[in-house]
Image (cartoon, rainbow, N blue to C red; front, side, top):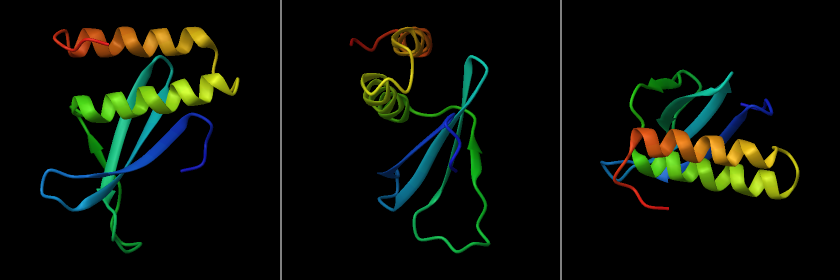
Length: 93
């Protein structure tokens, strides 16, 4: 991790074990990866094909904070909100 197109956070997994998650922007799409928090160097990042809503909302919060510091343009936040609305139509902002 370390590129400007990558944003990461730590969150509890479904089994209660903390996990590292990061999202990597490729063009207009996002790719999510995860691994257990207490992992050695031999454990690789696993791609998440269908990240849950909580991970999308965490990404949105991170992007909003970065946009407030002029690290992302404001329309970038709206694009991400549109993507979340398409994937999770029942969610209200």
